[in-house]
Image (cartoon, rainbow, N blue to C red):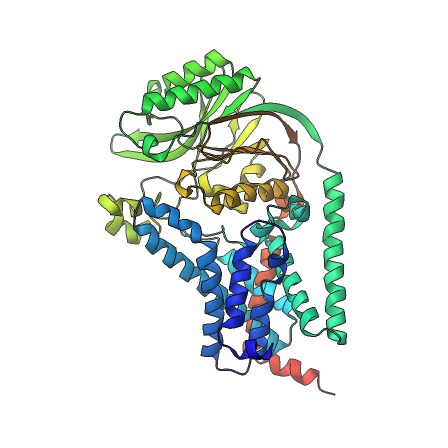
Length: 523
């Protein structure tokens, strides 16, 4: 390995490739648990090199990993060349994150003599958590999501949340490294033993949880409709009648199969709703209300909702509205809270809004347009309170937890992922829902315009997983457990611990704690 360690790129590139493969979601699972071994080896062998050299190697690791992980963004080039700039920009930002995380972990290892199994999860998870804030929050690449296709392995997410899952992956990588690097030595045997104990503890809890699913106190029969409207049709001229014909036909089919609640995808209603608050008559969707009365089913409709509180003010929402079986539109409504930066909402609007708001042409992709949802409010259907997440909100563990804790009996994800074509990101996003269901121990329903749609039970198992680019209807009796999971009750404790350890370690190292630690080890 010495020849590879002396190379400034071989081991960082290998590690980046393995990390990228971890996100593919195909067996075997080996890349997930060895992806960091090469970069840890390289950092340890090059600890005496100048910091600039180590930063370059760590940045190369991140570049290779994230240019691979984000490859699916090429699908959006058919809409705008700006997607190429976004791809390069995001991959570079994430590469800088990876560089910082492994470099900080290496410093804690070198200065404080901490084991990699502590320093690596602390640094990586702390920075992951930090990136989940601000208007440009990013969570899709969080490491815990790489295990979401394997629900049996992540049953412990109901205790630790996704950051605990990510910390498990990182600790397993670190222990695997120590085992491989120091095989035949006592340190290697201790690492192997620790890895075995960690794996056994996780698997034993997983097995117990798998055999003891949460008890459902009642059920509700829910249907979804996947109308499969291509984007050129959805945003085309004079296509509303055709879209409605398909949507209403599939809704009747779902209701005919006994669905008490029928879910539509994001902005599935082909007409915008303009509601003047002072005039209750304008809160009306005549065709949808008539369909609810005809079918006798409640409809959760994805709608572009223009709300006009007064003569000189209005807000435009990517919303979900509930139409009762008697045709009433419920006064409770929900809307997307985490807007896609630039595409849906201008980040840091007080600064950037003056340059981007209202722009046309290609720049319209950076000009936002939607208003952030004002609150989390489950929709009170007759048989269940329906929590909603819209579009990529399924990627945010904190938001799903808040929606569940607000009193939702189950959570519906209304989305339109036609933007991503048939890239692997389609399957990645759909699989992430498994983790959200386990974290909150409640059922989820994913309803997507062109797929993938399906039901996910509290153990993270999919039912009625649909194909892409097909019309589909699914109807299933959903279990409705009561109570909250441990993660639902306490939140991201794993991230708080990682942040405390990382910040405390960096402060201690900077204050000379490393010298004291080394002196304490001298005979």
